[in-house]
Image (tube, rainbow, N blue to C red; front, side):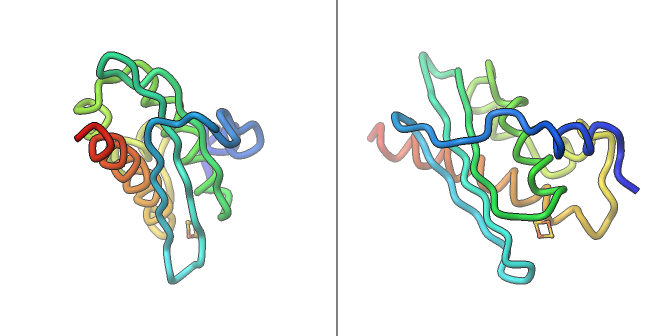
Length: 122
Ligand code: FES
């Protein structure tokens, strides 16, 4: 029921861990399933140069976190903000409809990390 890419990112997640010197941190949770995701970003010259995550959640949430942190690297903040639950799911080769909220968690945690970074620049 999961695509090969989902299984790959679930069993071999990229960018797991803390980032002590993160420029922005975003946390998002889903009260229904209880899953939670934290995304860290490092920004240089308006581009995201590194990203890490820590996720307490289902396999789809782990795969989404891994994929989001890969997708954002090298993107400008505005390009990263355009990442949605649909684009993450598409990069993962699709997600079952009941798992789309896991994808939403990733897109929302990323948005919050970017907002956190921008609020610190003011
Ligand atoms: Fe809630 Fe996956 S079941 S994030």
